[in-house]
Length: 275
Image (cartoon, rainbow, N blue to C red; front, side, top):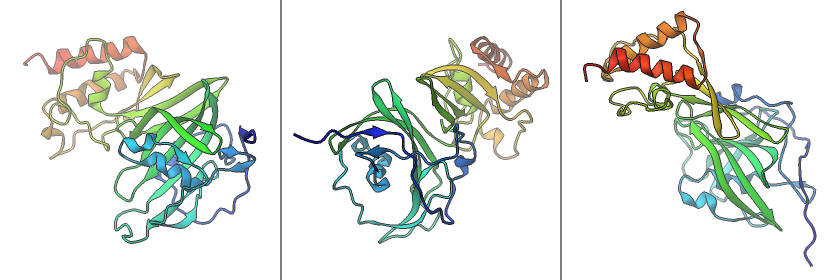
């Protein structure tokens, strides 16, 4: 009979060396600053095993054998400089990144609705700074990803303020102008990247989620300004910016669902009537 394995919170001792700290790491907040690795059978899971979760295709859902999960194609450069996260920066053995240092970091959040929950941050060497919340099961030494509860890349749904307390999961997501309008009930049909900005560098608000349901929105750039040669590339962006600044000037920057609906109504009446 196989031994009973224990999955639990763990406090491990690491020698932290100078290493990459992703830009998004400054935003991520936890209840403590201690590393919280995933513990199986009394030992931290090798972070290299969890890198499988960053696969861009559907293979991230494939089972992971914790006893055989080496990555011969990478060279670890240094351990995490963020005491709240477990992980490392690395290079590709045969093709070192010429842009940014690749990295993979994670934190075990705890048990949630019958599964174990991880928060992950990773980048493969390009401009992306990906974050995600992943549920998983472990049977013996086999790790089985279950679901991606939330994920994103910077302003396209990047995660921060992630916490699991009292059985409730909460987090914030960065969103773009297009996303903000789309949150409203009966939102107008717009085209991302044509009507409004929707890129990973176009943050204008944060959405507060509680157990996968969004509860409120915070406008994050009260001085949102038009940018010459950029704003005019999007049909309704300059008008959106004006509505946004008007809300900020009235100190209406914390919006519940009714507030989001009012914002989108003001945008529609001011910017879309000609359509």
